[in-house]
Amino acid sequence: EAGVAQSPRYKIIEKRQSVAFWCNPISGHATLYWYQQILGQGPKLLIQFQNNGVVDDSQLPKDRFSAERLKGVDSTLKIQPAKLEDSAVYLCASSLDGYQETQYFGPGTRLLVL
Amino acid sequence: SQQGEEDPQALSIQEGENATMNCSYKTSINNLQWYRQNSGRGLVHLILIRSNEREKHSGRLRVTLDTSKKSSSLLITASRAADTASYFCATDPSGSRLTFGEGTQLTVNP
Image (cartoon, rainbow over all chains, first blue to last red):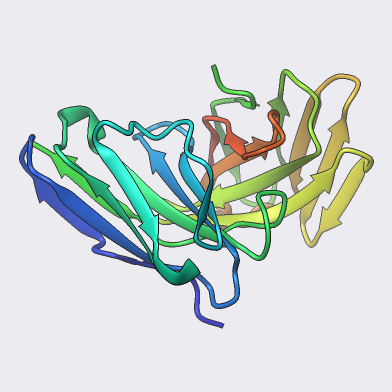
């Protein structure tokens, strides 16, 4: 069974530039998550989708971050404009149906903002 | 502040020894999950224990949950160098999302 795919794996940008991350969840998984993990900390949920609807985006900085999940499958997370403090690993995860189920994580995208 | 807090922050043991990590949380939960993260990689789910369960086993892993004390422990028996990783507990305090602690960094020396 293929796992959660993410791209790119690494990205370096300058502050005020924009960047986009892509995620392809495990086939058949209804729930998709984007997490931000700052070095030395645990992952923090940014947004949770159930199929193509948003369940929880309370911790998403909506002035600069946006996310969508087209047709309830792939998802993109965008940052515009980026700030230095956005340097982190962005993890995508999926689960069969809901946050109480096991979440399967992708390898993450490591973002460095200079 | 984080809902789940792991203790200790770092743990270094010899191969073959047992490793115990603890997680404390503040509000009631439906379930508690443990994840492992190897350096530079995504998280891997280890075990899920529901609030009405007290103990669960999976291979060399043993998880306990004490809802009266709002705490959980993860025991890894007969540790191996490959167990070197960060271990996170995750809880669902608000009933809507998982909240991760800051993790315990385990180093198993050969």
